[in-house]
Image 1 (tube, helix red, strand yellow):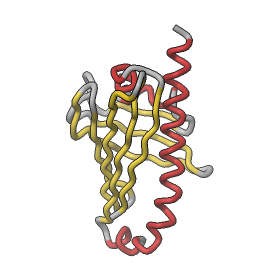
Image 2: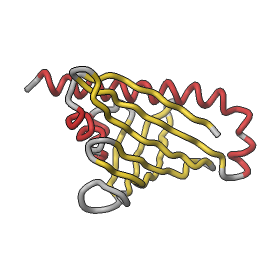
Image 3: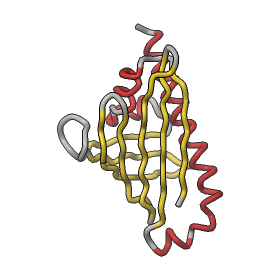
Image 4: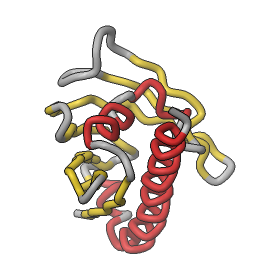
Length: 152
């Protein structure tokens, strides 16, 4: 099983940070390789919300369907995805940090299919690439939120 834990400090109130990261539909505005997000359920984001995101990854499109599994505003939310033979779970946590916030993502991946299990020896390579991608997502989110704050 692969595990990842990454954090970034953001110069904004925890409620602001949470509102931005929980605004799933508008993720393409803050993360550069999100091409689009389609909401598959109606209503406000919460437990049971489903969405499909399309990302541009290495000159290819990656399509994933996610489901919100926990939602405690303004502290954290969790989501699950069945991705190419892997169960992927992540939690986004927002905590006060100094005059701003600390945004943390905890992610676990577990091979579920035979193909996923056969890929296990390559997890070290894939986890390095995934860390770079997730760190860029966090940095992009930080930049987006801090620019929004400076424009008000």
